[in-house]
Image (cartoon, rainbow, N blue to C red; front, side, top):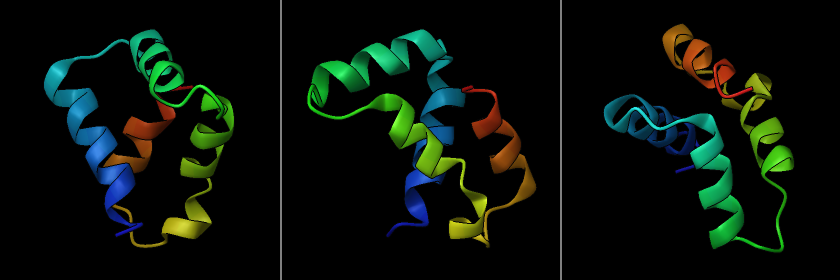
Length: 64
């Protein structure tokens, strides 16, 4: 399941052409007690997701 989180985010980001500012605002609205920056940092810790394809990693890096 953990492996699917970055894949789902990249899928939605590409499909709906969301702006990264919108993603951050939506995250903070839905999870007001959590930090988007910490969440994004965890997603970008690619050692935790060793099996991620390179194209997914590149797309995630665009969210910085």
